[in-house]
Image (tube, rainbow, N blue to C red; front, side, top):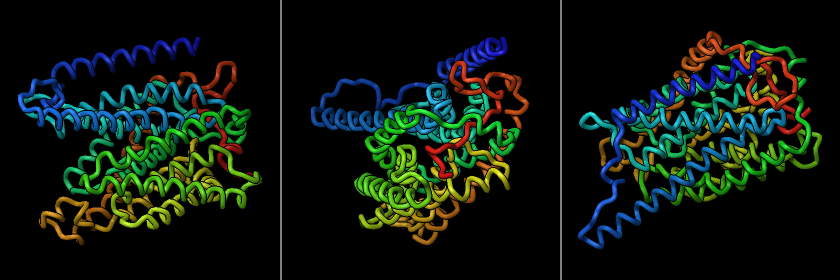
Length: 434
């Protein structure tokens, strides 16, 4: 009866949010002239426009698949929550994209009373959805789907505000989202987790990972990361000439990070070789560090060094930092987003501080010095942490007061038992070393 009531409550909430977004789209959103079909009298111009449109749609497809598949499977390594967490991830993406198009449109594409959106608008919305999915990784299993939607509603709003301050007002370059996506998403989710009720160790250990299902999801997620993430880190580069750097640096970082995991995991863990979930962690950390640094590193060995350092963070973090977060700071990080997204994103922010005139338009035009741009780049991190911390605490308090708090726990497999909506799956052998 309680599960039926929670399902009906979720159905009603989805209906209200969808009707609201439809009405707002009807009132404000229109396709931009560049994305509208037209007849051309100049064959060369038509050819150029069609090529550009195909390129943009190709990049949008890669980014969209990355947000939907790559990030969706990142929270599916827990056998108890695998299929359910993927389903909730798709729900979060479906709502976050619509809400992000509206909010970002009002800030950036609002002209003559209308939002004029195109393919690039959807790319930015996918970035926003990705940050929201990272946040959900910190609380999966502890909140119900209705609370997930509330988290997405506020997370998208605060992400858009943070992105506007950094990219729009300060002129920060963060093409792959080291700060705006990975760091913000991780620490926003961690602060929500900090506010939620804490559970006892026996409640967490009931959900020990078993079986081969986690590895299956990790394999799919890792493959998606390797295929699609170079597009994710390069599709919004400040200058087109820096785009090949971002793509190639991402591949080098992925390779070095994977090697680092195979070096360190056998030393810290009982297994002779890392499990797929640990290799997936390495891939995520590699691209998180390349989000801001990808277009800054002008030599391949720089990307190898950055990727190698990023690959060391997840094994060390799960072994030494996660217990401290839980015992001292009372932060229960279900999927380890602090180690996989937060810390590598911060490393990428520091590596992305140097201001290259080739990359930064303001520096290239002479309207800002390289030193000033470097200071702006460096300021992005504390501003993001401040907004993520305050926003996460506010969201956590609202989740506590949400009427749907008594609903069923997120993603639990049918008949799996459980300990209520606050149940936290344990980070088992797939992630941490015992």
